[in-house]
Image 1 (tube, rainbow, N blue to C red):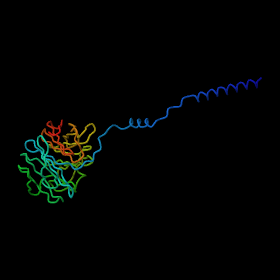
Image 2 (image 1 turned 45 degrees about the vertical axis):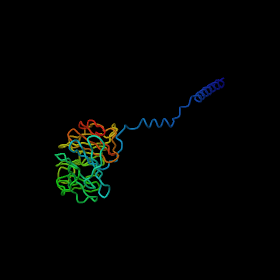
Image 3 (image 1 turned 60 degrees about the vertical axis):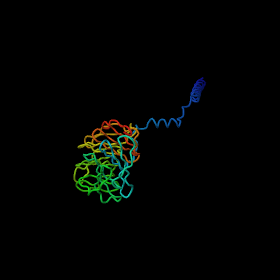
Image 4 (image 1 turned 45 degrees about the horizontal axis):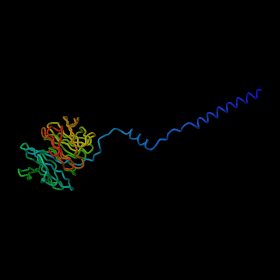
Amino acid sequence: MNDRRLGLALLAVLVVLDLVLIALALRPAPAATTASQVLTDAVDASPSPTAPAVQPVPARHVAFRTGGLAYSTTPGSCGGSSAQAVEIPVTGTPTTAAAPAPVVGLVTTNPDGSLSAVAAEQNCTGALQYTQDQDGNWVAGGEPTGSYFGFPGSTDIATPNGPTGNPCAVIDLASTTDRATVLCDDGQLRTNTGGTAWDAGGTVAAGVALAPGPEAILYALSVAAGCDGLQFSTSADGGGNWTAGGCVQGATASGPVGLAVLFDAAIVVDGAGNVYRSPDGGASFSKGG
């Protein structure tokens, strides 16, 4: 009797096990992860957008002239390319102009609206001060004194107190009579206020051009996320802090970029030679004037 009960119990256990195995076999298999799902997950996990990569090159010089006219020239380089200059009308297309010499280290606006420059021959020796006459011709003078300037391809920057070594791979130099700030190719800023030292300053991420204002004011152009072109920014403390202005829509950083600011007027020449003007201190820009 006991053997019979034991047999029935074992049989019941086997039946239950069979039912469990059948249920497991009939359960739907989980869906396989597809390649498209993997790619979607990767996109969803990607970091937030940042400023596009830019490979800056030495900036071009831009300076205002009398009556809203402007002048711009690429800098050329020591033992390399020669400067290429244009006259920029108030409206209309820029026209080819003469550069003071094959390599240009500085172009500034004089109080009377004329231009001065520091330039040298292709080997970057014998730098001279130049002035531009009313007909647009450059007239050579003596050796430059009291100016900050540098030539692409040179290992030095001239200061009022004598030459100093380049503090970095210099993209642009913004100077007044008593101070200069260079924009390095990594976006770092270095400032000289006398002597031979270049002090670390702020940063212009993906910066491509720099321009001086009065006292410690600086203006910059950079490639920035959210701006389909070049971002104009202003610093009131020598580059430590920046306030974004207008976006120069459509401007390209592919090539030498230049910037000049005079009172409320700003002018940008992009890497392709296109001209953009602002009448409101860089809050807005329009192409061609």
